[in-house]
Image 1 (cartoon, rainbow, N blue to C red):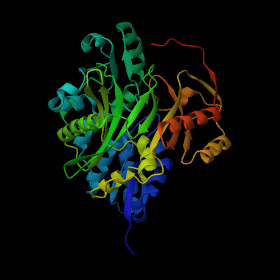
Image 2: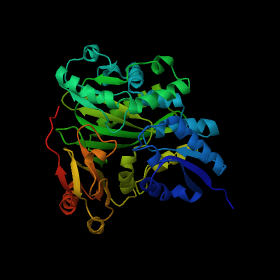
Image 3: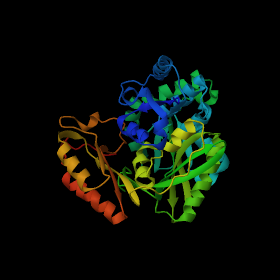
Length: 432
């Protein structure tokens, strides 16, 4: 009997496990949890050392490992190369991962190869009394942690007064990720200039335009781009309202983005790894700006790839982890266009009613391929939601496929009309 490949997942969850199990390669693989999603998301404290030890214990107890994968941001993507190094299995180096994920280090590397396509930036210590003066950027500018995810603690700053108010909240929460992230620098002998930094935040001048994400991978030093996804925001709060695939950008702009991606990925030294890079295309000045690099697939995009290609881009991630060159994605899906809609609200409050399973099932039956993930339930307060951006609360994800964009939007509006959310909003508070 042929031995099945033993594949461990950092951040295993039910939604992505189902995607993995539908892959053509799934018949030759057994999937196991190195770390469960509940152990690294929504926890009071991120103990990286303990999570790594737990992963080692599970793998050793199982007895063998052929591949390690993760489709989640920190700590998933950073724990992966540490596990791979111990068991001598394919993966990118920890240093190359950190060159992508440490926002300040990443900007320094980007400035060496694409200096005209990045904003002005400055690292700063949020606990310093004269932090605002140290930034030396004229408002408006963005501030964000040097390591973060899902726009956690990211704010657009329009004045010194606003900065001084927001920094109070930043000081309360910034070390939640900064401390465990910095632990890795010290524990794994990464460059001292970054492990010794007091600065845990970065300020950047705004970049605007058509936002999108380039999905690609590196195999044996060769950088391949296989898809570009549009990111649509609400316009007022800069919160995402949907991801849409394929991109509507002109081919020439997509080719230019792919070229920039190849340069920065090569500069970071990333190899044998998937990645996604967020870009802005400003049509007014006909220029592309790079926002950030993520050395993993975007799990928020997987359903769209499955709808368009007939297989999710988990296949890219899995084949790389098994040491193979991924196959080209073919257009064998049921739809021509697909989106991941993020249903949001922008004020805190208590949930009185969430959509019933009957409502969800009726929509799934009416619209082929539609999937709905509701993140709230009756009785909970929206402040209990974990990992939200600084301006909104994500109530649900609605995954829809269609023949064209009009049908896509029509199906979404039908979902909105037939999903019942009732929220008792708190008394209004000042918006900075």
